[in-house]
Image (cartoon, rainbow, N blue to C red; front, side):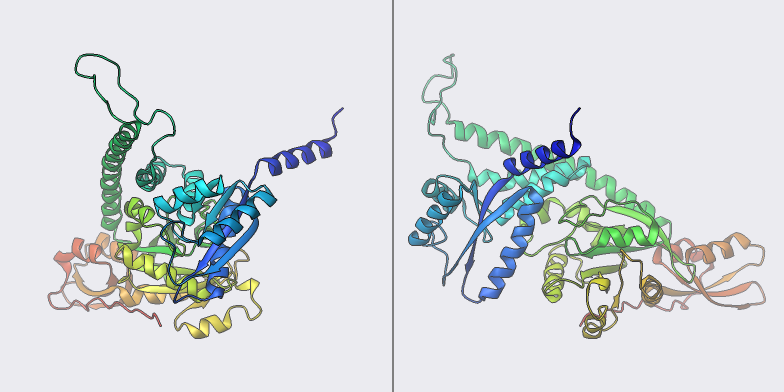
Length: 444
């Protein structure tokens, strides 16, 4: 009879045996500090662990500019090779972005794989993509990354085609064949994603016709966006304490304290120096943030430097055209900090602190969210005939009624409505009575 503890131990040993051993490298360039480099390496170590590998050592260097040949100097390359040999490391990962030539030269000098931060993030995305669109987006980003890194093989660099009429001669290099094959695949993926983007746009139009306002939850990876959505709507979205656990957006309906319903969407997490190729590939998914009426920016209150995460997220939002959408900052994981996030809330006016895991502070969050939604909604005045009870019901269902009074020929109603709802009810709208749309942005 087998011993379950021995079996579990055996599985653990096998897992440890097959986890890659990684040496991390960080370079402090002009304008950066050693603290910035260490913070970047700490985050890279988390990325490495998420990808299924272990950090065994890290090296740092200060330089004014990167070495064009190997990013780090020749002496540091020799030191790095000795460290890899001593620790039996499989791979070297740079926190800085390597050019194809630098990566190739490093691999030749070290005798092992050399990667950069972008390659690790792409690997994690590939592991976590589950939907058809997510897989296509990740594959497109990976192919765009790999295309300039194709190399001529050691053998068969000038492989000939079969000797048929019209095919004789020097033929094509295998490199050219591979490059053309990748370009065809990229073109097909771009066509497929455009078709999926049109479907997503149609779905968004359907939601806008419903008259409901749209709220997008954005934030740094592992800040607790999915957990917050689950706490608010019981969405059942995967929420794990690891980076990029959720890639595919999820939308749920949420009723605010005043009764107004809104649509809340989760989005892919951001990170410092998010690869441009990923932003390009995921643009159709990230458009949910650009098209939202309000962004709920979730920040990890327990992070060493929450302000750095806020800056990184806002940089990506600017890149996708979502920086003009009003923002509501929420500090999550307040149960993990001594003052419950009070000092952070004080530094960012209009923000609140919550713990999605413990479900604390959610009542304040919902009241503040309701106030922010009312601030950016349109106050519309309508005169509805008494016999049109269906219209009155629609106004109550899709918006927030501010006041009602007898207008003689009907009921005069002032309500906060979305532009879509006001458009559908335009035959009852009093000309010139539109209260206007106020976009309140309380960013510091």
